Length: 294
Image (cartoon, rainbow, N blue to C red; front, side, top):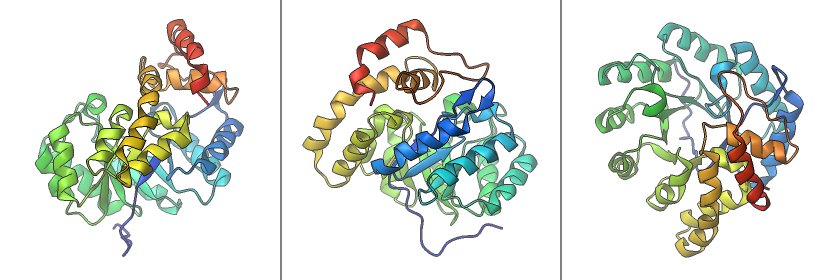
């Protein structure tokens, strides 16, 4: 059964979904530790460990737990969300219960991939995980990865569960986003980096943004200014970020991002198969905007 805090969780601000550095085929824990220690003072709300940006699908459970331990040791006071995924409910619930011992701010949970269940099946999936989790659940609405579309009514029904707290919104449906914000029971975080400005301006609480590895303080400030209603100031900071965001997703994430971080000497430019490194075209474009990568 879930352990529900009497104080509702707050996922406001910028959360950085961490890449997983590699040294050869092994996780590079030294580089991961250094990355977290670099990000922690920048004003971020926290990190997401083993999300899609972290290539979690290519990591086994022991590697995921080791990555989480490194992130925890690197910045113990910085909140952490753990990404989970799967399509076998029993195995997923066992993994959720294994995570009970970890000090987590939340679990980021997508629909089961490949299966494409009905809305009733999606409701049962998230309800079972929320009941099993010791941490609040954030629904990861990302149909282009999972093949499953969460309808507005399904999300609004799930909002009634006391252990479902937020949505990472990659659904591509602006009307659904606005409906969730207007309803107010689930905190809405932009999951598409290019939609941070519009989502927060309309009442979303923040973002889970891979681009936030770069120009981190600027992303944090944009969100803060929007929350304060200082739209013109936020826009002036936001617009120069758009070419960088576009480039980070010019090829499958996290290849361009890892190339950018490698250019700064922060890690090797290495991904696990079937992911491949960024193309020379992307590298040339990165070099052209190198001054904006810090």
